[in-house]
Length: 172
Image 1: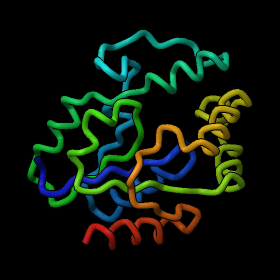
Image 2 (image 1 turned 135 degrees about the vertical axis):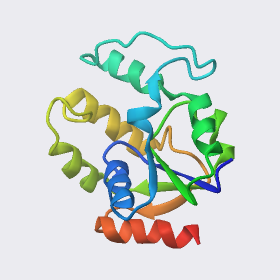
Image 3 (image 1 turned 180 degrees about the horizontal axis):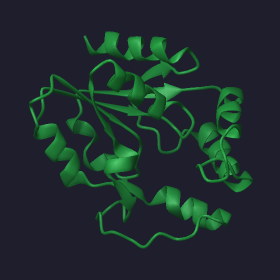
């Protein structure tokens, strides 16, 4: 396992990408999980599945429930001890296969109004920009479905520099 590995989670619009970019700006090793580790697959077996159109509510839910990370790649990156700290930013529905390997889990939290403002500024080509996608996000915000339990809550409504400072302070 790497020296110390942290997961930064939260729902779409919570600020994971912004946190990742700020950590990178400060010189930290960051893995954009949704860009480099993710694919559509079976959350139990990891078997890849074909992506369906996200145009209907059923397909949006299908895609959300099958957005997983490559567990072997997660473990491989964690095994690289060339970085004192590694931050994995993103979310998946198969985290139960690797979440216990992290030294800490941070959950970015925002209120519904902040989430709506952030997602409302997205175009149709970004997740949450369409009404059906927003409906799913609003439900997930209410239920906290898919968010790891036991993570350290971080108020992500603050300026991004403060959010990252809070994370780094808790990393020691």
